[in-house]
Image 1 (tube, helix red, strand yellow):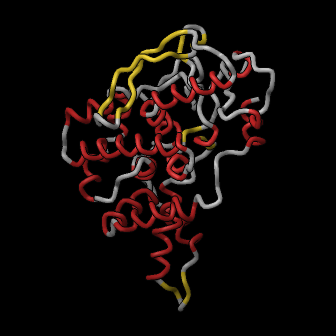
Image 2: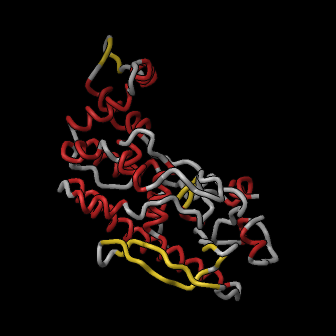
Image 3: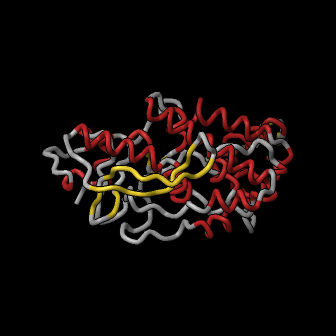
Length: 294
């Protein structure tokens, strides 16, 4: 059963909606992408990016300042959300990306944040934290944007002349206070629990950023410029094959070491992410979305 059926909408198909028509009995493998939000031209996208930027600033400052209490506070409301039905939480009883789990996952930042001062974007978590990828970051951003997603949900309901059937109390990031805020809002409830609609423009099936991509697109290109064999550039495939053959996270270790040596590599990657790698690449298409949700 999809959201459109619960809302008793007469149409079906992603091209008819601004939101992801998610399944309600299972999670959908789609993820909130911070780069899509950053590149968005819509008011919703701009406002959401501003909120995410506020959170990122507070989050990374807490690690830079070794502020243990602030780190605990920031991660205290990072539970896995079930309201969107997106991700890998198996729909009913989301588990996995808890505050305690994130504290462990973020442990490498304790040291790296001081060695790589250019770490600053949400996407960097997927580069420098082994095993932290789409599901973890999407869940975190969903919590950060909870109030904005609730607002979007209410706007969509109003569009179809559907009224709120209850209220929800939740924590969301407040950019003015630079902290979490407990909020109660009108909401749409399904089986007694809040249901959040997610804008189609915010989601992708896979992120286009990762440690492997950063290694290939930035570090290897610099390596090729500086190293030659018989007067020719060493092919990327050979270099990648060499590092992948090394035990104990060969590529990840090289990513960390090279960025510590030249942290402007990461600034270059940030610029290319928004201007090159995502150039001409938007959210998931309606046809692709239909194959996933129906």
